[in-house]
Length: 82
Image 1 (tube, rainbow, N blue to C red):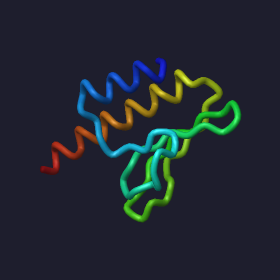
Image 2 (spheres, helix red, strand yellow; image 1 turned 180 degrees about the vertical axis):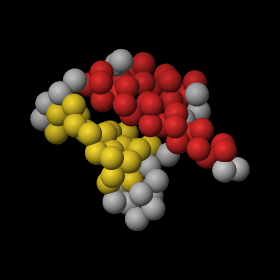
Image 3 (cartoon, rainbow, N blue to C red; image 1 turned 180 degrees about the horizontal axis):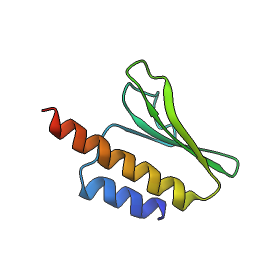
Image 4 (cartoon, helix red, strand yellow; image 1 turned 30 degrees about the vertical axis):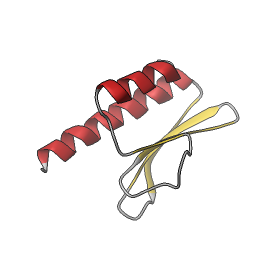
């Protein structure tokens, strides 16, 4: 998956609660993706903005796949609890 494909999925599926490459300060219950050197990291923040379930990838595509899957899961959970 590429960044452009991920952005299109986010728009098409109306995915929310994410931090795209540190575009803002991490908020509670967000999914974030970051890159440092040649390592992409995907993590989920808990209610106190502590990063949990942190995974690192050497492949951008793998990281973006994980990021999108977490956003989709977040959407399902949010719809269930509404």
